[in-house]
Image 1 (tube, rainbow, N blue to C red):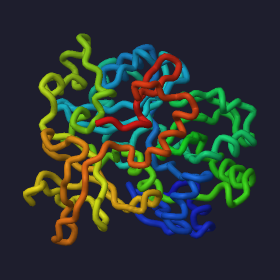
Image 2 (cartoon, helix red, strand yellow; image 1 turned 180 degrees about the horizontal axis):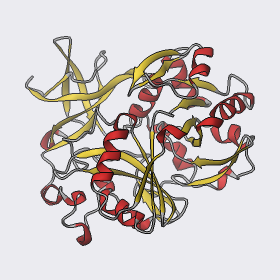
Image 3 (tube, rainbow, N blue to C red; image 1 turned 90 degrees about the horizontal axis):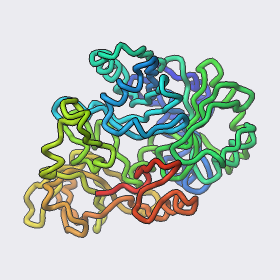
Image 4 (spheres, helix red, strand yellow; image 1 turned 135 degrees about the horizontal axis):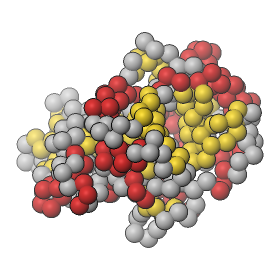
Length: 393
């Protein structure tokens, strides 16, 4: 098992360590529910150093990024972040990722931990532009500070005006006396906050400064368990569960990051053009339990006649709602919100209903209060639209 630079701090804080994506990572410290609510109400720190960071550089860096990713990188300006995916030749998803535009010749691709080598190989094997591709994953440490108090805590450690960084934007500046830190107004919780990228050798300094800057009731370390329940309450897809090489962005509700343009007609990103015109055969839906029961991955989804119509891809007991919630693929004709279904839990059909995520709509109001969501449900910042906070079917 690999260990992140923060491993000693996890042990010091009593983290329960488990294998994850080749790393030994904390799944919880003081309990998933407590850590979940800490992020919703105050702020929490996640070690996400297992994530991958791949630089694409050079005069033709943009051309490579534009050709290999599904979203339109042409709209990116320096300081913009874009949610996208790497589509394969059959329209499936190699990985979902964030694209950071430093400038027209420097792009940082942030990829999932379990896919670092796979993504790196994919990019290299399709690099006909001969751009410089640098896998910097082992040299970068990353912390996600999430929650309504995250910005005020971080502001104590930097002269950068964090309130001036729009959602899905970043700046590179000094944090806790460390130069060259990427301060990114992004996250995976729906609770607001920043993701911080720092040189691995300075990671310990950043961790210690963060916890020195806030009382314990305002900032706690949070493990992978709460990270999963937080993202699921917002309806965010998890690679390996809800999306993979066999799922298309369109059936996963990610058509908004899939741009079909003439210049990419024969490229991998355009493999799903027929699906775009005719519609996907199946769709990823959200559901909430109407009877007591906790849905888990691979549990069968049953129709009103008791026949299997799909299976759960992600499921949990929502700490905020105190009810079971989940996602899974069903035939497109059965994906309408309000449709009554059953989840087979330990050989017993348990009542559920298809709903439109996010499951915790109150948390979506955080972004609305910040003036970042337009009436059409798309986030607007600097002329670039995103729909990452409100998950659309």
